[in-house]
Image (tube, rainbow, N blue to C red; front, side):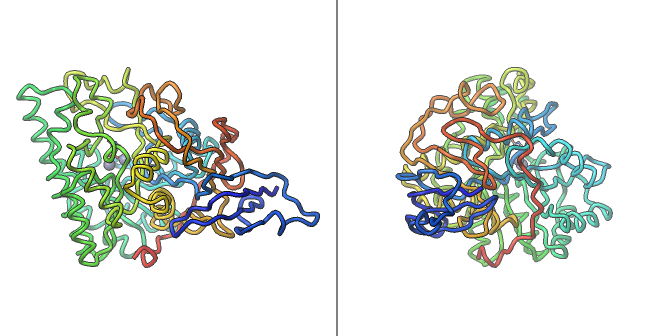
Length: 468
Ligand code: URP
Ligand code: ZN
Ligand code: ZN
């Protein structure tokens, strides 16, 4: 099956130019001008897609999702089936989700459980990171096996004492191990021990509504933890990746490290660019916006945009972790500490970033492609198979209309969650055609893919030299 995408503007992280793209089977066969003439002479393509006036981009890669995560006394609502379908609608054709090692069990058991959840259910390709709950001789040894099996990244937490929290020694040991096996440690960096004290004080003082969540999780404690884990990585002589960075203080710690030449990398998420502490107000309605780190006050997002422009932040992922407002978020009525932490977002990332980033003038369209697709592919060992419009790359492509406007709403989105954080927000830019390994999975708002099309991605270790 050969498909010719004709007449569009190819937009990559490096630049933009008018070109056709010929897809043969699951991969890109040719990129160039007037390919119809070149492939003519009796070998016409089976299908032609008109991309005139549109961008042709490498499809989105979301390296931070939590489908079916058991958390906060419940489960993240999207399954691998519903969540990956929603991702496809939004122009994302690869996710990396977090498998969880339960305390006392092996990393492999956790990973196997996530394989069972995902296998045969995904509409798009998927990989796994592993959340390490125990760091001991056995789990450290297991890390080497998982890296060899294409699960090359491990998340640890300085937050959530009693749940996922690891102390500095455990984090340092895991980092040392990646120095030997080439893996990468991803850090949730907030000082959870101090935050729990402040949160208890906040409740004792009578603030039990969700706004207390935002008030208690001080940004300085994200900055402190970010600096601490970067310095632990420096001592272990390994790279480190900070997940869901929300605060100026944390960004400053990353900036300082990178200015010193250290391999410190970080992502932020749309919620930290487009939402704010104010959204946590309005009584219990604020529960819709409870995530960790919390939404910050208005002075933080402009710094995050600067970080994205200057490459102190390399990636925008979603941290997609949806809980219904009715029946899940309301577990925290009367005590914000019990609101399940997490927000939906996998479907809206590409369009929010296009509208609020490119159209608003914060970043170029090439940078948009870089932070949503190419840099994640490079950092997480998938490049150039993913994240590129290049001969031999997977035909994971989006024909993107940069002018079409749509209004985000829970009544029209495809994520399995009963609210949207962006209800009523009109965005400019939308995916017309979404292709995953050569198959059209979404066309003009219709899902044309299938459950089970998505394959598990065995990832390589990242080539950090290329990121430098
Ligand atoms: O609030 C969040 N971020 N929920 C998901 C778990 C995590 O820490 O990434
Ligand atoms: Zn986290
Ligand atoms: Zn997360």
